[in-house]
Length: 249
Image 1: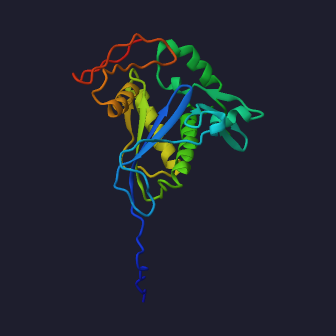
Image 2 (image 1 turned 90 degrees about the vertical axis):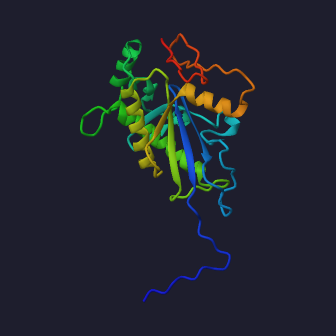
Image 3 (image 1 turned 180 degrees about the horizontal axis):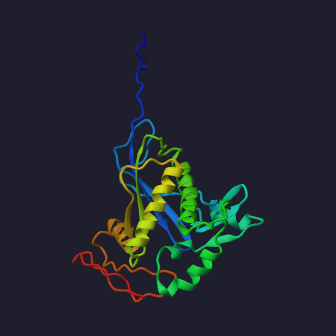
């Protein structure tokens, strides 16, 4: 007969916490932040609810850019090299600007074709797809995010409920958004981050506006635009009227 386990006096089983993890995957750099959505658990979480914290450790503080990683990836026979580590790799072909291959626009057609022709071959003789490379990069990226959440002050545990948020350019089409969402969901699974619900996508101007408005409130008049690797004619986005417009190239 199984005997009940007596808890030590004062012992408390760790509670599952809720958190939001955001990923800003850019054409040249990627970054991440998180915040706790549940009340603090005294035993392990020392962060206040709703306070946004950047994920660090992508490189050392001495090197100057610990809060972001280059969107570079390199395949070697026995490893995937990504981010800043690519600069120290001795051999291999670097894949960069993979993000622009997700959205089929005439202005990027030639560069997309060049990038896709340079993707590595798989053991079965087929060339890797853009979506596979993107998922590989994001898997490495989210694995790092998970490792950074493990120590105090947050102390992430496998039972914690994470909601994943991604940002995308304001002009992106629905197919591009769906591909981004699928890659994030696959990467979270491979990185061992169980998700609570589906990945949520917000446009980059929306995310920038929400953060700025939260910090500044009604103190300033805010105008947010989306500037990427190619020129845009930007249109003002007004949160008051609730009818923001896409930026047009």
